[in-house]
Amino acid sequence: MDLSSLPISPTELYELIAVVGGVGVTGALGVLFVRRARAARQRQIDAVDEVPAALPRQGAPKAKAVKPKPEPEPEAVPARTTRLLR
Image (cartoon, rainbow, N blue to C red; front, side, top):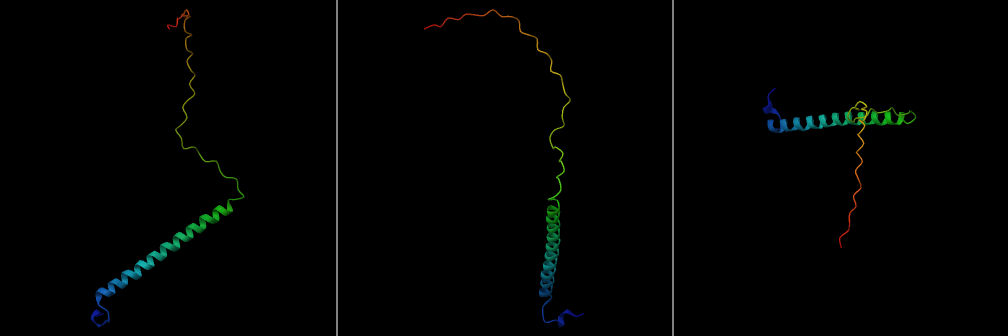
Protein backbone atom coordinates (compact mmCIF):
# COMPACT_ATOMS: atom_id res chain seq x y z
CA MET A 1 0.00 0.00 0.00
CA ASP A 2 1.38 3.35 -1.01
CA LEU A 3 0.92 5.89 1.76
CA SER A 4 1.51 8.79 -0.63
CA SER A 5 -1.94 8.27 -2.17
CA LEU A 6 -3.71 9.03 1.14
CA PRO A 7 -5.10 12.55 1.61
CA ILE A 8 -3.36 12.79 5.03
CA SER A 9 0.33 12.75 5.77
CA PRO A 10 1.94 9.72 7.45
CA THR A 11 2.56 11.81 10.57
CA GLU A 12 -1.15 12.59 10.87
CA LEU A 13 -1.94 8.92 10.30
CA TYR A 14 0.34 7.90 13.20
CA GLU A 15 -1.27 10.53 15.40
CA LEU A 16 -4.73 9.23 14.48
CA ILE A 17 -3.71 5.66 15.26
CA ALA A 18 -2.29 6.75 18.63
CA VAL A 19 -5.47 8.66 19.53
CA VAL A 20 -7.76 5.79 18.53
CA GLY A 21 -5.56 3.32 20.44
CA GLY A 22 -5.52 5.55 23.54
CA VAL A 23 -9.30 5.93 23.50
CA GLY A 24 -9.70 2.17 23.04
CA VAL A 25 -7.37 1.29 25.92
CA THR A 26 -8.97 3.89 28.19
CA GLY A 27 -12.43 2.57 27.36
CA ALA A 28 -11.42 -1.04 27.98
CA LEU A 29 -9.87 -0.16 31.35
CA GLY A 30 -12.98 1.83 32.25
CA VAL A 31 -15.20 -1.14 31.50
CA LEU A 32 -13.03 -3.44 33.60
CA PHE A 33 -13.01 -1.04 36.57
CA VAL A 34 -16.78 -0.52 36.39
CA ARG A 35 -17.40 -4.28 36.29
CA ARG A 36 -15.12 -4.78 39.28
CA ALA A 37 -16.82 -1.99 41.24
CA ARG A 38 -20.28 -3.35 40.45
CA ALA A 39 -19.28 -6.85 41.52
CA ALA A 40 -17.84 -5.53 44.79
CA ARG A 41 -21.00 -3.54 45.47
CA GLN A 42 -23.16 -6.57 44.71
CA ARG A 43 -21.13 -8.63 47.19
CA GLN A 44 -21.70 -5.94 49.82
CA ILE A 45 -25.43 -5.98 49.18
CA ASP A 46 -25.56 -9.78 49.32
CA ALA A 47 -23.56 -9.85 52.56
CA VAL A 48 -26.01 -7.62 54.47
CA ASP A 49 -27.95 -10.61 55.80
CA GLU A 50 -24.85 -12.64 56.64
CA VAL A 51 -22.90 -12.46 59.89
CA PRO A 52 -19.47 -10.94 59.27
CA ALA A 53 -16.52 -13.27 59.74
CA ALA A 54 -14.07 -12.58 62.55
CA LEU A 55 -10.89 -10.98 61.29
CA PRO A 56 -7.54 -12.18 62.62
CA ARG A 57 -5.64 -9.67 64.70
CA GLN A 58 -2.69 -7.99 63.07
CA GLY A 59 -0.74 -7.31 66.27
CA ALA A 60 2.40 -8.86 67.61
CA PRO A 61 2.21 -12.54 68.50
CA LYS A 62 1.16 -13.18 72.07
CA ALA A 63 3.97 -13.93 74.47
CA LYS A 64 3.84 -16.98 76.69
CA ALA A 65 2.37 -16.40 80.09
CA VAL A 66 5.21 -15.71 82.48
CA LYS A 67 4.67 -16.01 86.19
CA PRO A 68 5.84 -12.86 87.92
CA LYS A 69 8.68 -13.44 90.33
CA PRO A 70 7.69 -12.67 93.87
CA GLU A 71 9.54 -9.62 95.04
CA PRO A 72 11.31 -9.99 98.36
CA GLU A 73 9.66 -7.98 101.05
CA PRO A 74 11.74 -5.02 102.09
CA GLU A 75 13.26 -5.20 105.53
CA ALA A 76 11.66 -3.12 108.21
CA VAL A 77 13.26 0.30 108.21
CA PRO A 78 12.93 2.36 111.37
CA ALA A 79 10.80 5.38 110.82
CA ARG A 80 12.70 8.63 110.77
CA THR A 81 11.42 11.73 112.31
CA THR A 82 12.22 14.92 110.58
CA ARG A 83 11.91 18.33 112.00
CA LEU A 84 10.73 21.18 109.96
CA LEU A 85 13.12 24.06 110.07
CA ARG A 86 11.58 27.44 109.94
